[in-house]
Length: 117
Image (cartoon, rainbow, N blue to C red; front, side, top):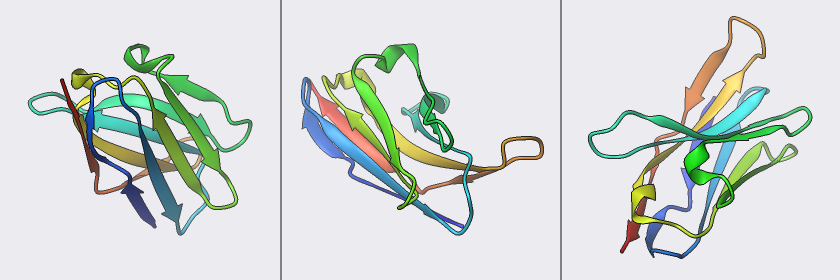
């Protein structure tokens, strides 16, 4: 299984970025974005299911971030608008195999997002 993120970078506050995550090697039930800021724990940003495309967002990003996926390409996207300095973090893509226990999670290497004030 491979999970590869891309699209991070430096942007000014109020700007936008789009992250991409390509997963291969299995069938994934759910894909998600997490982030980890310096000195903080990794936190869930958004999730999306393969079947039904159900989404879930952290309160801190609702209305600003949108998660979407292309099931044919096994790729998930995170459109980030109205970015704030507190969105600065390493963003990780998560791909989950299985929808019932035992599930197995695979992670990408992370992509840095830096929002300047």
